[in-house]
Length: 309
Image (cartoon, rainbow, N blue to C red; front, side):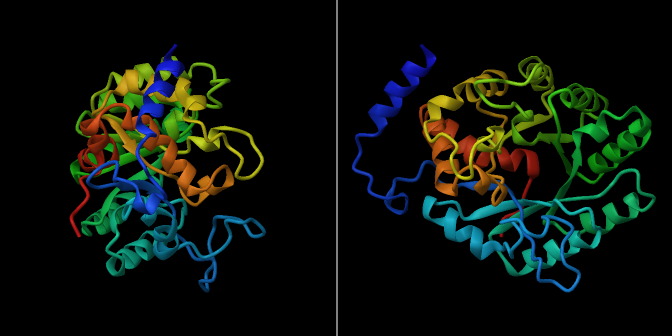
């Protein structure tokens, strides 16, 4: 029934004479993609990720992203660092100094590293630096509990946020951390690793509900198409396929704590940017104008506190 109602709403919206994305009416007055990765393997030092021999192993820079995102009205981004190299945080900040489309940067710093505090203070001095990203498995590692808790408190003290990426079972540890450091804003990446909408991972629904109860936690609706094991670029284009995931997130987090992120260029493995964007555009458009404004940019301002460029 949910899918039928959704498709009826989507069909009603489809009657407008839209030709191409570049001529389509904007889904929101502003759109900020809060999950992109930029890197350049041609640097003298190379990159630790992605690996050689893959389609991702190529220079990926703001102009490349704007070429695929810009036609949809997406012209600002928060970068999320995948590299564990400390100085790659500075590389992105230097890039951001030249590229005004970058409104924020989530760095990569290990709380178990002896230099964590000093590095955090160094990078936090730059207003583009809005937080760090950790793995959910690290947060759920009992052996690292003291370092994780201390690092989380330092993030909160600097007014920064924490991105978390991990399996569904790590969401419970993340919920505990959110309770222990209530001043820390947390953004769960990639749907909390839901799995294929038609075969959700065990415990995902329950654990999403548990972490959504923490009001200092937001959910990033990113990597939606990557949850499926499909041939390259062949993820379903029908938003109805993804309703088991999207409806549950909407039920748990509501309009105020869901955030747009593409996970580009990694998302290209499953679908091109126009499909990635079109799926969430079609879904959130049925929720009303204000829900679109919140999802596509206002909620990201709340969690990241990015700066105007």
